[in-house]
Amino acid sequence: MQNFFNSGLTQQQFLDEYWQKKPLLIRQAFVDFKSPISADELAGLACEADIESRLIKERGAEPWQVTCGPLEPEDFESLPETHWTILVQDVDKHIPSLQPLLAPFKFIPDWRRDDLMISFAPEGGSVGAHTDSYDVFLLQAMGTRRWQIMHEPVYEAKLVDGIELKILAEFAADETWELEPGDMLYLPPNIAHYGVALNDCMTFSIGFQAPRQIEILDSLVNTCLEKGLDGRYYADRDLALAEQGSELTPQAIQRTKDLLHDLIEQSDDLLAESLGKLVTKVKPSLYEVAFLPDYELSTPHLAKYFTQGDCYKNHYLQFAWSSHAEGGWLFSGGESYAVDKAGIPFLALLCEKTVLTEQDWFDINKNQSVVDVLRALILNSGWFFKIEVEYYDD
Ligand code: SIN
Ligand code: CO
Image (cartoon, rainbow, N blue to C red):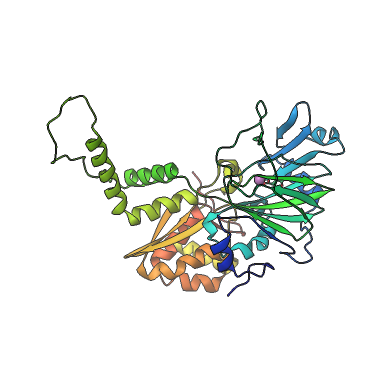
């Protein structure tokens, strides 16, 4: 049984008792933790064009003033001594050397993970009391932050009017903790929390994503349309005499529900494909940096490139896979790639490895469907070679 950090719980106990259920504070989850990134480096990231960042000033031109990045040098010059926060999203992708920090969270499915957000704040810095719609692990990386929470989830939050930030109008803490470097607080969705920096402070938020019903339905419909599946027609063999011909009767609604249930009941493979495509979509804020230029890649080229260097995973893209009776799919960048049955054991390899060597290529090359998937992934930026590649000349 794997231990869940230094909590005295196993990973399974954490999942059973806390995950999506209740908050958990873990003292020294990361023993002797030192932030692998400095406040200056974080500020540098917040100034870059293709990196999503925010500066929040509690006492700015208006209360809780939000400035969206890229931040300018003037934004830093005019900062007060206290009560502000810089937040940078997707730092795990922009600085892939931080990825090992996420490895201990791999007992939760990769596709549920969203990003590593890092904040820096001097004394008093806070983003106010709020709820999030996702699970988050708040790892204290530098300095001290006081976290206050309400144990009862807040589903219909009353918000402070007239400001951009979503801050709770009513917050009455029933628990207060001071977190030092290495301490970590897990919060399920909808738990009201309020963190205030007590001194120069960095907090790492490892956030998780969960698709909504409507997004899954939308993806299912799109997958059906792409495959030219238009489904069965509504049928009403049990139609009763209409009292008023214009009414959409409760029976008609019930038949519609049955028709849709039926579609979902018979669509495990379609659902897997729709979910895989949905959860591996690249966020719009990362479009500019996630995709690499196209290049020429026939199978013989692949063999040649592997003799010249390793192939690397693109950390901006999310990967997942699933199998069905006849084969499997790999999902990445919102696309699905099919392999045959013999290719299934390679799917985890292509999703979880970060580097493919020539030896991996020799294994992959035994299965044409996997070679085709790797080739398609390279063309779609999922994997790439660092060596000079031949570009399409059009
Ligand atoms: C912060 O790092 O200041 C805020 C993190 C959060 O509340 O999600
Ligand atoms: Co939060």
